[in-house]
Image (cartoon, rainbow, N blue to C red):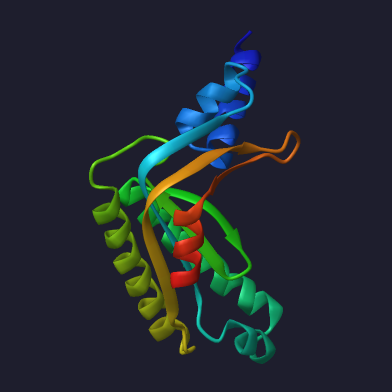
Length: 169
């Protein structure tokens, strides 16, 4: 019985690394589909300036370490600010505030996150002696969010607000 509880806890912990805790609870309850509309949220896209040229100049293991170090710092900042990492795509990092739970300070939280991301990039640049700079775009407004997929599912966001943040980046 204790082994069953341990496995269930392990499952819950793993699920919470894939989706926000509030969404994990809904998945556990069997809710499908999970689709929400949010009237006030903010989303931020960031990526490395000159990333493609950097990939030609450093070894693969060095590049992966750099991305891992940078995204680990971003993940820690997301947790500190109570915002949700949505995903990474290559050298891009996407984060949202006000989802899945609304919050009045969604823009302030995400702007603070952006400042921490810029500081982390600067610190890692100094530490590695590599020209690390990031650009970021942020937008606020309505959007949709939900879980897509059945096997390798993910929590994602869509809408004009998301598109605007992407273009601003």
